[in-house]
Image (cartoon, rainbow, N blue to C red; front, side, top):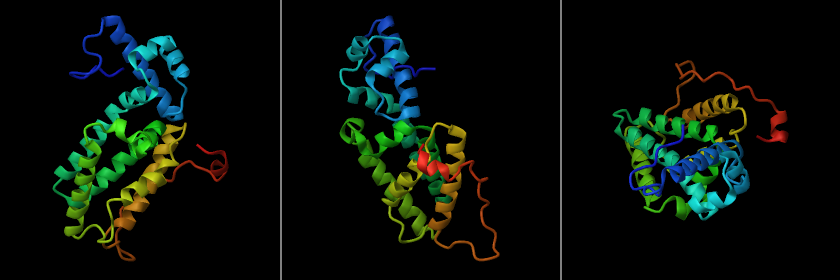
Length: 221
């Protein structure tokens, strides 16, 4: 279902039919971006929404404005995941949950990846949310390192490397993308531990292998 307009959102004050059109456009944009990335033509989104291009531009004067509004919920979800990780009393569990949940969000939505990795940095972060998120991430990392569970040379910027690696797993088959993401994330998290399990010691079990094949390297997502 389309998201309801937030308090003090651009939808406030619109007539019922205008609010309905706006919601349909956002729903169509989110579906198109998730499946094909953020380079989907505006005309395609208008057609999916069942409105004219002129109607779309009345609600969203620029393509960037549409992208920003379409990803508002995802950015809010990321912020909530980070807050939950910091609230977890177990430093390693909190750090691990952040990596796992954000990578799963990324694997589901190809468009979110491009937006998150700064395709529209100023527009998508008008209130300085990214800077605050970076401060919280640094705190999460430092807390895990001080607890002796995260290797001391891990840098908060390494999370970007994780996202770049995970980015290639987003594809049309959501189940396969999620399975591959879970397995890759498990391997990476094991390497981030301060003291990996010794030979013969119990390690966390890996998720099942993902249904991926070598030919997909040539075909792309």
